[in-house]
Amino acid sequence: LQDIMRPLRGVSLSNTITAVHIAEAIRWPVTMAVLSILLVFCVVLLVGVARHSRCALITFSVFGLFAVIISWLLASIYLTASVAIGDLCNNPNAFVEHESPSSLQTDILEYYTTCETRRSNPFSVVVRKGTSAIDAVFYSLSAVSKLSKQLYPPAQLHPQLDVLTTEVNLAMKLISGLAALLDCPPIHREYMHALHAICDLGLFGLTFMLAASVGAGFFFTVLVWLDSHTWIYIRKKRDYLQVDEQDPFLPPTAASQAIAARTLRNQGSFTTTYYSHYEHHFPPPPYPAPRPVATYDPDHPHHYTLHEHGMR
Image (tube, rainbow, N blue to C red; front, top):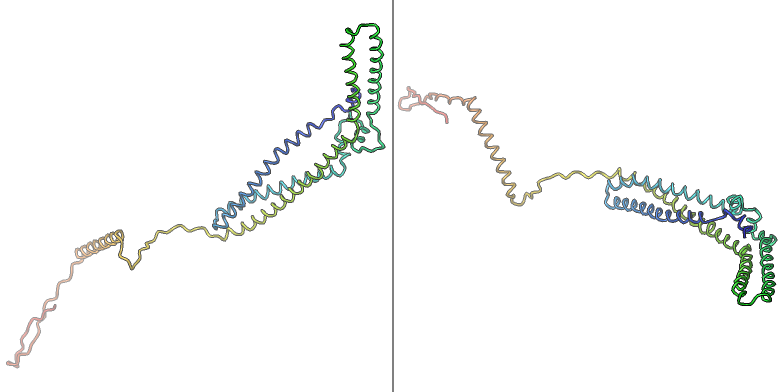
């Protein structure tokens, strides 16, 4: 067993599997959160278009830039991962050989990655030696048991001898099962399943996410461009001007009557004050004296009578 475990020391995929599980546990909620944020941006745009809201459109034009940056950043990440996985799937055996520990021999690695029939199991010699040793122990135990039965009574031999026989039989079963486990078909089958999951399903998923990110990038780029050329043509809402909406054909309200009476009162006081000031500084001119008017008396044709003719 030490000869088998020595070259395999350091070969472990537990760290890689743990890292993949952690990355997937982080990727899924982060992707859903990013897509939800992009959906919220689209809802803001729809609200702005439906209500002709200048504020909503300006908000989308600002946050839409972040959406464009996030979309193209995700596209670059997915593109990098797709290229890396594509290189891995192009020649996976070379990648595994490069990443394998130095203690692992090349013939052992090639035996399990290729599983060619012309290659022999590198552990066959060790398994054969182990099988031969167990067979020798079994034959030796058989000879010792026969001899001991002749020299010792059965009561003193059966507990210890039975335990030894059981352990030897168990070792023979384990060594035969170890030979089957060290054969290349089961390990190569698991290796091909891992390559199928990475190169087929994983690469397809990355390609789909890459296409979705690129589409989202172009989509938000066009939306931001259209939005930035749309909100500038939407006028800002004017402030509400309070006007008198009194119908001229209806009787005025109490408030209108009070305002009108106050206005007339102010105008009357102004007129009285003005005239009193004018009369104080500028007294009116006196009326002209009545002028005598000559009248003709028919009884005395040569006499004229003067009468005062006043003015009204």
